Length: 284
Ligand code: AMP
Image (tube, rainbow, N blue to C red):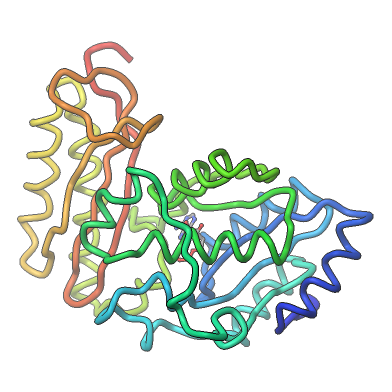
């Protein structure tokens, strides 16, 4: 069984000792673990001698009216999965320990890319993410931290956090794990009814449509993706956007080169995001 650390004080005490003789890889999660999370654990294990998985549903990154209260909490099941995966430490603090005076505390605010895409639909989301990630980094003091490409904007912003604030942490991005039919694994997929699960496949169809239109320009890529989403009655699009993966700046029609297509949509009441790499232009 992993050693479960339930307070910040205990985590600091234990992990400071560990850090004297081992390298530490951290995988931050909100629990409700699936094979996507476990693929991050795999990468963590290959890049350090001890692995820490944090399980914390972070209230600061949920906007009012989002699913903080109903977010799935399946700790016993998560622990069994982390045990089978050979994780050394699980850090599962209480909200009152992480935010003793509530979430109106000092915040870490991202640069311009923290105001785009997801941020337009989730008020102050990335302040919450970057704040909790900074707290976790300071508590765990990892050498390596693994984040999924599934949350591409988050991964970009965490890389910037580490670079901009001169943190000595190697951030590793992990590829998106998908179901056989293409649906990206997500803790929120468990909210979906059978009909909604089928409709949710339109997200990956949208991304594929955009990526396959790369030689026809940005406008065609976006309209192909939007078409795939609009074909589904149960799906309401938040955005389809194409960014330069190096800067996360939205690209214009003149852009040529590697691009990242991002989509967010509500399927029934469940909000899903996904993304896919693409190439814009004639030559590959
Ligand atoms: P979450 O528990 O949703 O906050 O996710 C924890 C970490 O797992 C984040 O770095 C996510 O990007 C990553 N993750 C979630 N779903 C997937 C997936 N399908 N494939 C790869 N990584 C994922």
